[in-house]
Image (tube, rainbow, N blue to C red; front, side, top):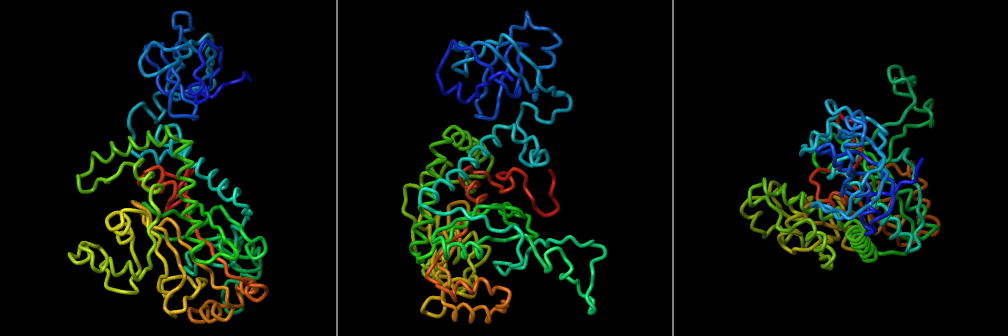
Length: 478
């Protein structure tokens, strides 16, 4: 194979009068002369100029939208508009044909709904090229952030027997013949005969296992796929999604919030630096999309402004109780404009309430703390008031909750009492309770839904558009 140079590297090098080979896919072919070639390294195409008078007519016919080609020649300064350099092709080879009558991606604007149906090809569009390059950068930045701080990357299990959240919305894992599973004498499914000898499911969170690691390694993080069998078709939910879950020994609630804020600022800064062109493209794309909306539904900030807004401001920190007072007295609540009215303390906050606090009231990201224990998970540390727990949620503009975490309950008696109150069998989590029996210590952690982060940084409106192959109710294509 001849050595190839990526288009991004060529365009950034500023070099001319050099011999190069490029390989990529044809976006357009004009006048039998000008190929717009893209290899996915950037949204910017390289113009390849064909000497059509001295090129076989049969070869020219095969240069169609979607075809994969190799072009070798001299990179020269371009006299045409729209590009600084172009490749004068001395040789062109067709690596893969594309029938223009059947190729579904034509050089025109396609709807995101249509592109979801051809998700195997949507990477070839400018929008999805930009989205997945940004996703790649954010994933790398997450690892770099934790590695720079001495965290250990821990792989927690994808198959588990516990339901960390207690929500019960899990996918079961079995190797039984579904039509004829073995039964016990009382007619129930006999999981003792299953592959793992018990009922198992796909994980909803790596947190509980992550805590076990933190109790020896001090600072760990997980970053892997998690699964929820929630029958939800909203623009915010997926059945398979990626979670970043650090767990830190000797951290309290404030340390936890500080780390989460630092992580978010770090990865956004990194993406702005590494994917400048992609984020500018996505900012323009969003501006065009917003023009179709009525004035009152348009964002006050561009995508770029929204990202810089999160970096420029210290996140506002307040308790759930303070937030409820603000929301109760807010104009949309008094005028009954909220879909879910805030009646008083104990209300489970909805996305509209979270966004009001961020976008209208404080006009900056918000960290909410100290929620009522009734609306939070069993493992969160109980505060001295007996009513609240040391929880921490971070709310972002346009998204609502992006991070959820807490200081964990390290006191065995308090944890067991809470598990009894809400009916979580202690014998099933004996291993989790052991970490409180043997050298337990104050510790904290949080979960950051990776797709929500990508959604925020790319400005996309639907979470199905920021994961390569979305899984949602009635869809597991590709």
